[in-house]
Every structure is written in C-alpha cells, then in structure tokens.
Image 1: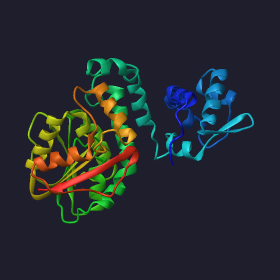
Image 2 (image 1 turned 45 degrees about the vertical axis):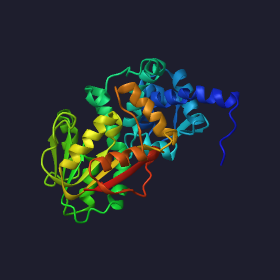
Image 3 (image 1 turned 30 degrees about the vertical axis):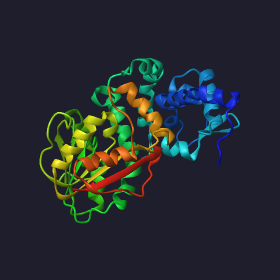
Image 4 (image 1 turned 180 degrees about the vertical axis):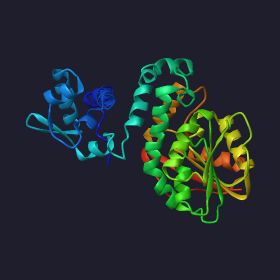
Amino acid sequence: MDPPPLNPGRILEISGYYWRTCTLHAAVKLDVFTAIGSRAITTDKLAAEMGLDPRAVEMLLNALSAMELLEKEGTAFRNTPHAATFLSKDSPDYTGHIIMHHHHLMDSWAQLDRAVATGRPVRSRVTHSDGEWRESFLLGMFNLAMGIAPRVARLIDLTNRRHLLDLGGGPGTYAIHFCLNNPDLKATVQDLKSTEPFAMKTIRRFGLEDRVRFQAGDYLQEAIKCSYDVAWLSHILHGEGPEACQMIIHRTAAALEPGGLLLVHDFILDDTMDRPLFPALFSLNMLLGTPDGQAYSDGQIRDMLADAGLKNIQRYPFKGPNESAIIGGTL
C-alpha cells in the first residue's frame, strides 16, 4: 500500500509526534499503568493514591485514552489489554525499561542538528554509563531479547554445537535461550565487568549457573579468551565504526574452532542504505551517542564476514522488531 501523500497535515503530524512520545514516557516514569492495575479507577482516586495533581492526571489519562492505551468508562479509566501486558510492572512482558532507555536519549535527539553539523556525538555512550541509565538499558535489552530469543533459538540449528560465545551479551538472554533449546550446549557471556551483576541475576533466574558463565572482557581492547564452535554477536556492531567492526569479527573468528559458526544479529539496512526506516533512524541514534557507530547494510556485513575467512554466508529467514535480522557464516 502506498503511503499517504505528504501534505502540511502529515508534515505537522511528523513534527509533533514527540508529544505522544513524551506522554507515554511520563506515564511509564510515573508508573501509571501499574497503579491502575486490573481495575477501573477514577481520576481523583488515582491522583490521591499516587500523590499527583488531579487536574493534570485527568489530562494525562484522557491523552492516554486517545492514544488507545487506556479505556475510558464514564469517569473511570482502565488499562487496555496491551497496556496491561506491556506497560504494567505486574506483567512478565513489561517493556517499560526500554521505554525509559528511550526517555534518557531524548535530550541528545533534541541536539541532532549539532551532531550533524559537527559529526560528533552529543552524549556519552549508554553502554559505558552507570546507575539508572545503564540499568534501564540492560533491563530494556533483556525485555526485548525475551521476546525474540526463544524464536531465534528455535530457528538456528545448534544441535551439534557444544560451546557458544555470546559476545557483548549483556544479561545473557540469548545464551540462556540457546542453552534451553539445546541441552548439550554450554555458553559464555562476555561483556564489561559492570554488566556481571545483571547477567548473573538473569542466569540464576533460569537455573543455568552450571551451563552459562560470565566472562568479563572488553572485545575492543583484548583478544577473546577460550575457543568456541559458535559465536553470537547481537547488537554490538552498530556501536562501532567499520574498522572496529572488522576487528571484532576477526577476533571472534580467531576464537572459533574449524567449522565454527559466527552469527551477527543487528538492525540491518538494505544495500541502498536508505531502507528500512528504523535502521536508517538508528544510524542517527549512533551518531548522537558514539564517535563512529552506525547501522550496516546486508552487503557490508557479508563483506566483513568474508574478510575474516567465513564461508557459506547466509541471511536467516528471520525478521525481528525494528527490522533486526541475522546473517551468519562458517569458518
């Protein structure tokens, strides 16, 4: 279907879309959806329970209802099924952490013109930050991976693989699900030392301490320890420039046994570099936060794998949220 014609109304809609974004962010930050829970509740009662201004709360709830995140029943409001599933902390499918990660990025996005003018980032790297920012990032990555990893683990045949490297694996979600789907597989999650508490908490949650271990290391600064027969690189290449990405892939390939499988999962552009939309926008997000990061095209990733000696390079029949895709090859 062709997109609607670009007219002043559509242009203004694009320009003001951040109003909706800020409305959602405020509701998640205030934890409105959790406070509402499974009931219908009036504005005055909710405001009193949360210690908020009743008039302002009514405006927020009306806007959330207009966005179809709440249902209005007379003077009361109720969570929609989707809001209850994804926006309440009482749900195992809560996605509020990644929304708060997006919230923390907003100041830098307001300075995009400066980043484009200078070609330099306007914020520090979230992956190297501390406190609330890093917690939202790591838990947000866990939220997203929990929705993807089970499907990926079923898609990719690791039947005869014995030791997986989850490089830059954060909480270790993919390593965990690959192991859950392959009883003979063990895994090592390598990431910065500051990530270890999050990873170990997640590994213990799934009862896999005997099969999934955490290894502190910086793949930009040192060779990868140990040897593996499969390596998983999920959402790490986009944080680096082409030379660093090639170095990461070479170091990973060097840690693979003969016949080893190297898999790259990322937001992947078409070779024209201007489609799909999300990876194109994500390149700008990397401009804002990294010196050299960007989204890469299918062809660029294939070339990097080939340069490191990988063969039988293929794109797997997988499409994740925001156009994430998987390309892999064997040594």
